Length: 113
Length: 114
Image (cartoon, rainbow over all chains, first blue to last red; front, side, top):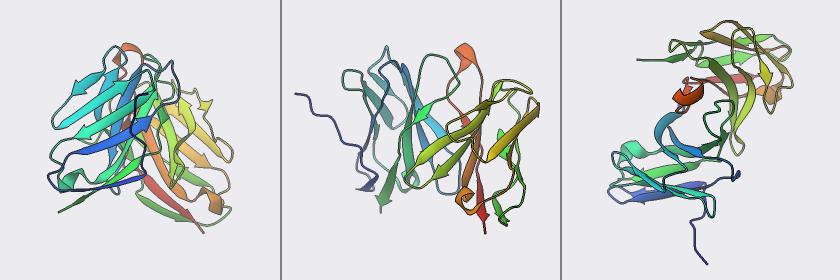
């Protein structure tokens, strides 16, 4: 069977390495997904989103992968930098209903210099 | 450039006090939300509002109320603060319909009830 990444509450990487943060979502009807970054002492900020008609979307140094078969999202950060240290969490939503997103538990990324 | 403003970054209140947390957004968003964030529990929705004078309960509304008298302002009220309401409170806003592209969050208010 296909292997998917486990969600880890913490992740520590060396500066310059690539980071992969995983998220399992719960609702098979969800069709819009967002990754947020929350730095210490700040509110969460939008990083990248993806709709269910796509399986990959790239931004600047970040890539989101969506596997609808196993209800799994991943966020890949290329050439991780100290400024990437933060809590990252995914959110799932159904359509354009802005009523309530469901947020994942979050992964704390620490980048070692 | 700040779009969602929470009036206080840190608050310390006594048990039994009535506490007001204020949130203002300048993006003309229809929807506003109050979440609390606790270690190991993630973000939990307290209340949200789709329009002025309109409110709906989220997942954990007990002990809280809200007020939305103007489109840009959404207040969270702790009627009688208790120590288990010590938490980080996050306000967020979004647009509605086809324009929805995630939440804009405030910087949070860290409330300590002693």
